Structure formats: structure tokens, C-alpha cells
Image (cartoon, rainbow, N blue to C red; front, top):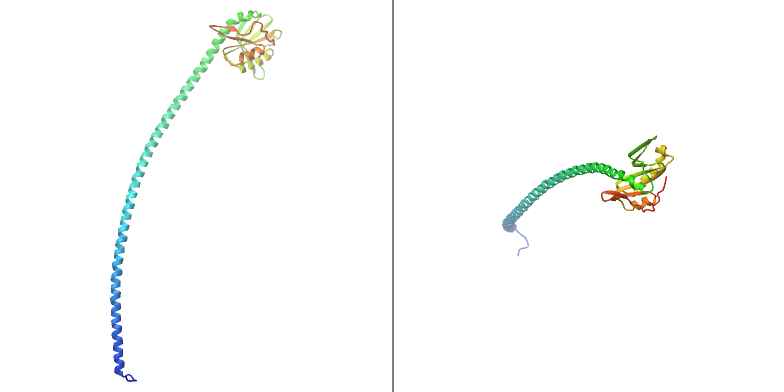
Length: 251
């Protein structure tokens, strides 16, 4: 083998190197083209798969949205219907309440009017019986008056339902359709103040009586314990509820 290379040897080596480079370059190009084609194929496949998935998901989303929209429409319609029904019920209830209020006011007015007439009836029943009732208890009656009234300075006033008079005594009768303990207390105050309002009777003994068609719990016993006569209904008339030995308290 020669120890030195000639120009031809160098040229041949250059051509061989160039040939090998061209072959490698061609092989590289081929492989690159093949890989490019494969990459493009895979990209298109993946793109198509992505499009398919997106379309499926879009279709599913549209379906869900439509279902939910339909459900929302149904709920809104039902809610609107219920609101209309509730509004109608409220209006009906309001009308019923107004009617009830009107009826209550009318009944109250009638009851008030009835109470006034009932009081007149009770006084009309009690007053005529007083002469006999008190005469039986040792208090002869010379005069029976109704609705005795008097006033004092300072706006003070007094009204006596039934006023019984004889020569040395008077009886103040408080008449109630329904007698209560509080009514008895009020009458005790009236008795204590009587001579301030009616000084013309200052020299007379003053007795008290209460009368009622309906007697509240303990009202009769409370009145008797305070020294008052108690007049109650008995059939079509009235009677004295006190025992025969009862001693009235004088004021």
C-alpha cells in the first residue's frame, strides 16, 4: 500500500464521501417524508377523532340544554300558575276577611244596641219589684226613680240605675244584665261617695243593692259579704237572694 496519496486517490475519496453523503441525505429525506406522511396521517386521524368527540359532546350538551330548558319552562309555567292561584286565594281571603270584619262590626253594633235595650229591660223589671222586695226586708218604699244623675266640679259625675227612697233611708240599686265582682266594687265606691253628690240625703241611711239576670262567679257572695242586697232573676220576675236574717250595711 503506498505511503502517500495521490490527487486521484483524494479525488476518489472525495467522490466516495460525496456519494455516501448523498445516499444518507436521500435516506434521511425518505425517512423524513415517511415520518411526515405518518405524522400527517395521525394528526388527521386525531383531528377527526377530536372533531367527532366535540360533535358528540356538543350534541349531548345541546340535548341536555334543551331538556333543562324544557324543564325550566315547565317549572316556570307551573310556578306562574301557582302564583296566579295563590293570588286568587289571597284576594278571596282578603274579601272574606273584609266581609268578616263587616259582619263583626255589624254584630258588635247590634250587640251594643241590644245591650242598651237589655239594660233598659232589666231596670224595667227590677224597678217595679223594688217596692215589694225592700218592704219585705223592713225598708218601706215611698218612691222609686230611675237614672238618677249628679255632677260635681272637676268632671266628677254619678249615675244611679234605680233609686229607692223612704222617710229615713235610700237604696242605690246597680242593675247589670251580667253582674261581675268588678261591678260590685264599682258600686261600693258609688255608695261611699253618694252623699257628696246628693247632699240633700245627708241625714238618711244609705243602703246598697245589685241586680243581674246573669250573676258572675262569686259576685253574689262578694256583694252579700260587703253588706249589699242581691236581686236575681226568678222566672218572669226577680227575687232577693239574701237570706231572711241578712243585715245590710248602712253608709
